[in-house]
Length: 215
Ligand code: AMP
Image 1 (tube, protein in one colour):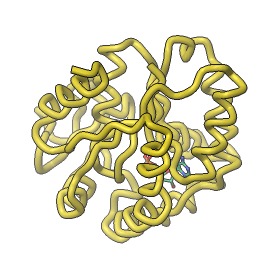
Image 2 (tube, rainbow, N blue to C red; image 1 turned 180 degrees about the horizontal axis):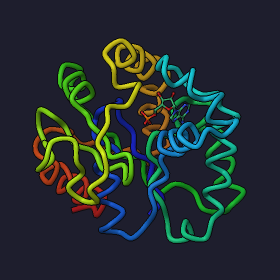
Image 3 (tube, rainbow, N blue to C red; image 1 turned 90 degrees about the vertical axis):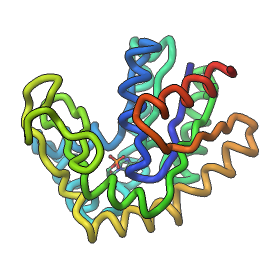
C-alpha cells in the first residue's frame, strides 16, 4: 500500500501513521520528523530549515523533494509506505507523481483525516512529543502515565517549537491556502478517501483501517 495521509496539522496523521506501521509493516515517511532530526543534529539542512519551521511556513519544495525521493528509493519502501506531511502543496504532489511514475509504482490511496478548526487548536497546543521515539501525547486527551516521560521508551516529552500558539495559527493558514487544495487534486485522480478524525485514537484507527481495506 502506497499511502498519502492528508489532513491539517493536529488532525492526528502522525498518530495514525504510527499505528499503521505496526499493522501493515510498512514505514512512515514524515517530512516533519526528517526535518526535525536535521535540526536536532545541527546539519546545514537543519540550520536552514529551523527558521522557516519556527515561523510555521513551508521549507522550500526542492529541499523536501530531494529528501523524499532519496527515502522512497530505500529498500524498506518496496512493499509500500505512509507519506505523512508530504505533499504539502500542488507542486509537491505533481513532483511526487512524476517520481512515482519513473519508479513504476503510483500511489494507491490518499486518505484525508478531517477535524474541526477548534479541535485542532486544542490538539496542537496540548501536544507533547517524545524526543527519543517521537511518540505523541496530549495534556488534554492522552496524558502519559508519568508527566513529561514517554510511556513507551522513557524518553523526555517536549513541546515542539512550532506548537506554540502564534506558529500554530500560521501553520493552519498555510494548510488552508496550500495543502487543502490537495483534497481536490487527489479526488480528481480518483484515489481520495476521507474519514472524520473524531473519537479516541483507536476508534479513528478502526475507521482508517475499514476505509483502507474497503470494508
Ligand atoms: P509537520 O510535523 O508535518 O507538521 O511539519 C512541521 C514543519 O516542517 C512544517 O510546518 C514545515 O515548516 C516543515 N515541513 C514538513 N513537511 C513539509 C513539506 N512537505 N514541505 C515543506 N515544509 C514541510
